[in-house]
Length: 443
Ligand code: IMP
Image (cartoon, rainbow, N blue to C red; front, side, top):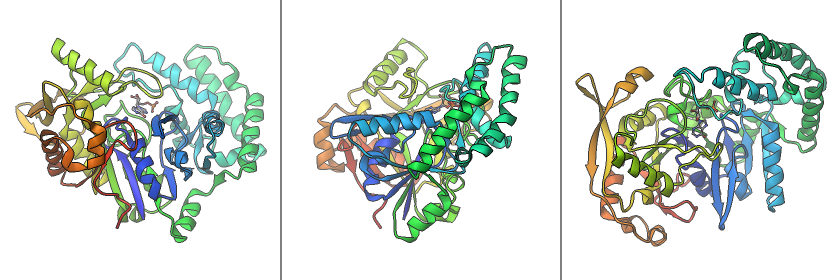
């Protein structure tokens, strides 16, 4: 059995909490794309864990795998693993030998390019973690893979080819001075040592084979998508996207199982009850038109803790965007959804959703394919009855029927529009603050 978890919006939908919740029935949790640009907070027994690379299942003693579709910064990885060990956990993390490694020059170049774009509307607002430049090198066939770290001769050969090119880029194209990120000897030394640790701890695997063996032995696998549909490199709002495929197709290409394996399982879209966005790009339902909107956005931002886990940046806030969700449900083929942060909308004076868009006098239910056209869309808002603040812990305990009626109407509208059942409703940050409806691992 497999369950794939996909962000339906722009990332930060609260995927970690559900991965952690349902991960109880998984034996292995596999990330299939992205790197330490992701940030998930898992709350367990009142302890908060902020992770960016280690799959959140590691908090629950699962095997965590970083698939070949990921880009891995070993410095971040080992710092997170060491931190978890210090807090008494013993995470079992495996890395695909085919995954690409984020090198120090990737991070430098990410920041240099953002800086170079600063005066144009091409700025992406990246997390500065070197994600884009690493995927560029992967596609350009000049990347360093986890498997290369295990063989110092191969590592040296690859670095001796690629580093002078990065140095030239930094110095000749951008007119800056290259630093220790371009020191081949220092890189060989540091990354050979990382390779030694990977070998010693038996962490590097052939991901596809590893998963096939474990599935053969009857293990349940959860594929954990990072980021969200609208920042998918193919299906998102290009160029304001990340450089990988958070949508469900990525679970196959990013791990080495067939698409039929993913498709025979459940694909659950995680939806936040409203919208948030870090970084640039259109957001038709953004709350920013007047002082009242801004006040509402501030309120939701504070109450929902809408500040980047990785960067600390305040997130932009908007109403739920249904054309976006219809797009997400189709691209990934959702079999169900989980709706998070319902409690954050409680006690507001108004609750709306963007039901459709208006573009050049036409009403449309789905998103245009170009970002420029998307930016021209005006939301057609639908207003809902508001619901009061209640004891959400009690609601989580009592179940779906205890959710205020107006909030149930909101949820049912969502489920009807997307034509999928709701498996869980998040009413607070902790795992226990979730209304359980159905566990996707149950037959
Ligand atoms: P990058 O992934 O660092 O290259 O950033 C590309 C875009 O994706 C930027 O707009 C980031 O803010 C956004 N992004 C990357 N990771 C996340 C995430 O985990 N949550 C929300 N936005 C993200």
